[in-house]
Length: 300
Image 1: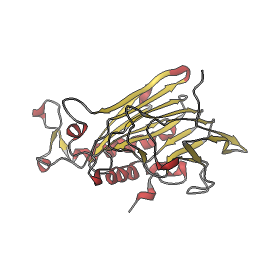
Image 2 (image 1 turned 90 degrees about the vertical axis):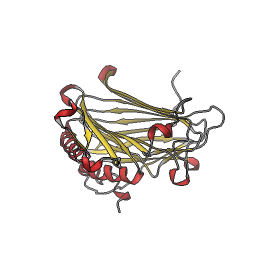
Image 3 (image 1 turned 45 degrees about the horizontal axis):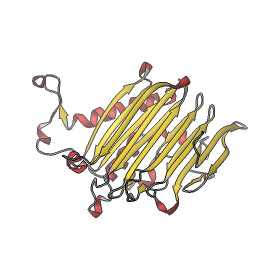
Image 4 (image 1 turned 30 degrees about the vertical axis):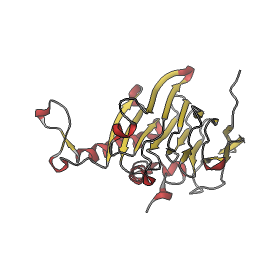
């Protein structure tokens, strides 16, 4: 039996332009497709996802499907952070995104972070099916909660799974993040001073220059915090200027897939604003494709 869908968007070329030919959503999901976001010269469809009531209620299950036709460009984003409210009993809130990306097409999934309230239980799964010449950007990130109000990693469960599959469901990238309160240590004890974790994936031939740029910039930024002396046997150690001080942002970067077709960046940060700044700086090269620089609305 096919799973009930709460949101569906199909984007195809119509008269040479990326056009939403089908759009459907129902409670608790609402989809908004504005006519214009950023430059009118960009051939892109922007999709905003919203939840009724301003967040995801305990027990909600949202299933959204996006079909990006050959040669089309789509940006999928949010208007604010995805709030996950307190759980009722052992109920878990769930979100599922299934996306198909055509040949020479681009999908950019660039939401604001997930913010889980105290005791919340949340699980999300994102599955992307694409071709070797498809292009994909994923930003997947979570905060410690309402940490400015004193809630810091107090949710019960957070799980995020990302699967990227080539034609015929051949695995290209499989990843899962699980944060769960333990009997011996809490999430807060394990995360220490850090309040945000993020993963950024950049994949596809159109975005090779963006991949090269972010790899170079991450290496340059982190070399200021760590150095690689011969005496450590190949392990990085904190530089003398950083001894006793944890860097506000830690990032790592690595390639994956055949011919290093994709790059994954992992980030841990002390503040949400520092991750917004990181994203603005390192994926601004997407502006020509999307007609606007991602996260530019949060610039100061």
